[in-house]
Every structure is written in structure tokens, then in C-alpha cells.
Image (cartoon, rainbow, N blue to C red; front, side, top):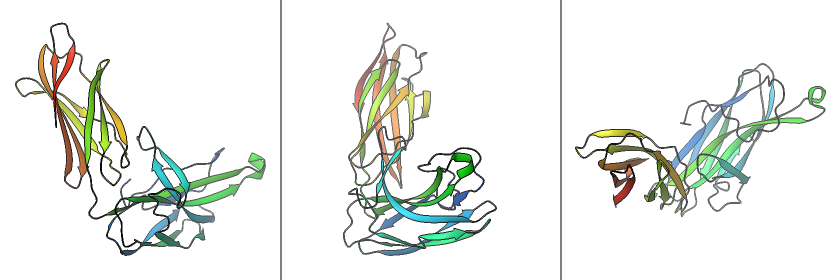
Length: 267
């Protein structure tokens, strides 16, 4: 979710039962910082209470990693427990506060980057409230938290990737997106298929991926069944943002028996 937009998702939600009357929202759901070694950055996040009634809030940091199949799902870890953690770099205050009815609280944070940074570092700053509903839930705690993701990456980051392993599988075509750089990549990918005359006969978008350095994730393209006999060209464009693009081309042939064949795979 882009900066300065409302973060509606509840990240890591506990048990919920019955109506939840109070709500906590963030004005900023993601912080993206391009940094150099030794930088110190001072900014803030605004937390809102959109309901009537005071809310007791605590703030805390956790590490996160995107998990296979790299569709955006995350695993969370205690601060400082994964190599790419930014937990030791970020200080924030206040760590506990009360949000008044329909009120707002500014939480200040400082990012202190070490002298040497050679890869992306990540984490999430959670804001959590806990409500005991003894009469309705026999004393069970209802825990709700929202989080602001932090992406702290070097200004000279390496965004490098490759599409490999194109193969036909049933009526679809599969390929692997491999992150060869040093930051998380979230490619916006499209494809199109051209006939022998260069006319586009099919196009579409590929699913969004969230791929850490050194990891790979799979795409699948469902090919149209009404392709006529003859040669075609498949082109995959993966936009890595900031002007970085990965392009993959492959020749497709539909033979007289209706079978599709991949040939002439090119970068």
C-alpha cells in the first residue's frame, strides 16, 4: 500500500468474535527509504482512532519475511532475529499511549543507518490494542494490530532478475522469476503473444510477486485455446520500477496436430 494511504489490513489478527466497535488506522502503511551508510532520518507516523472511546495502544517492532509462493504472505519474527532485520536501526516514541475518542497520535521514529549497508533491510512497526471482553468471551483477549512496513534499501541497490525455466504445462506456460539482486523485488509483469505478422493475439497481466534476494517464484500464463496453426512470439515484460525492466521472449509453434511447442527462448 502506498504512503499516505489508509492501511485497512489487520496484520496478524488474534481471535475476533462479535462486533469490534473501535478501530485503529494508519495514515501510512509503508515506509520506503533509499539510504546511504551513516544516514540518520527523522520522520513520523500518524495513528488514528476512528471510533468513540479511548484506546490503549502499544507500539513494537517485528521482523518479517515474504514466504513462498511469494504472493505477499509474510512470516513475522522477533526484532533482530533475521539477517535482513532493520530492528536495531529504528527507534520510535512513544511506545505506549492512549488514543482519545476520534483522536490522533504522532509516533516519531529515527532510522540510524550503519556506516556500511550492502542490501535491503526490512521490518514492521506494529500498533496493537488488547480488549478483554469477559462477559462475551469468558475472559478471552481480543488482540488487534495494524502495521507499517519498513523498506530500508541502499541508494546503490542492485535490482537484477531473470526469467528462466519456461515450459508448457497442460494448457498453460510456466516460468520462474529469479531475484539476483540485493533487495526485495515486486515486479509488475505483463505478457503478450504476437502472430507471424506481428499482430497481438493475446495479452494479460501476471500475478504480483514479492521476491526476496536469492529467491525464485513462479508465474503461469494460460494460453488461448483458439490459436491457429503457425508460429508465435511470447514476450514477458517485468517492470521492476525506477526504470529497471526484465524482458523475456520465446517462440511458440502450434503444429498441425494442435500441439504447442516452445523454441528459441531469448532474453
